[in-house]
Length: 285
Image (cartoon, rainbow, N blue to C red; front, side, top):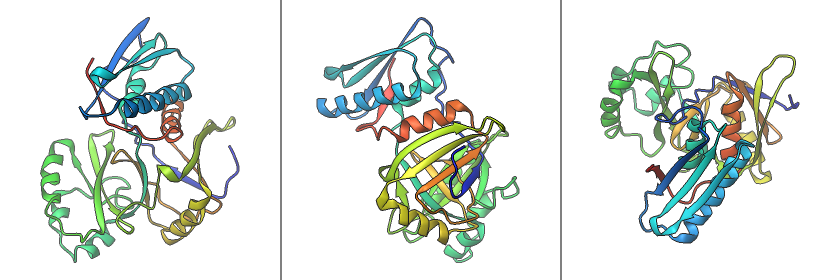
């Protein structure tokens, strides 16, 4: 592994791969995605197509064909045999908006809401390690009820809520993200590059994020300010991991290690290194 100043250790709750598709492409598998904006311009559609193409190339050496259908606001991708379709479809449709937020834990969130326990009454708080980075968790069937209540929570624009992915037992974590001047600490526009590596001796897979020069001091200052607190990494409004900081991270580099697979870190790097899609897409075929 590359030597860096500090390593964040996280469980990569990366259940973001799309459902509804078989794992492997057949000889050819045709997928058509359509912009959710029926007034998207041909130039923006072409820009998104270019981003998608670069994502696919970065993720895998397997072959694919891509064509833009501007009159229908569509992009057609033909995956050749060997592609993991679940991941491939996500590379076509995930916007790729990445943000970093400091989080409230239960104690600090209670202070923010002046001791109001109404939200906590809807959440479970005895799950493993949830208290350090999330304010609680619920069964999937209870999310709608919690979301309805969250609309009434008064947090004076100091907080936004985001869900994490499902755990192995079906629970979903709710995170309270600190808003810094109305937004995130850093975003995908602050990332210079994301790479990954696997230690030959231990087999541990790590994701290395390098920030642009203008973000190096911000990251160092914010990680110093949040020692023993979690910083959530949010992809398209979903928390994908929230490691607890034990030291400040200097030098503009940080490595995240955890229960990753090569596919997961390849996917993450492909999104980080190629920018956000210029419009949202849905699969139509």
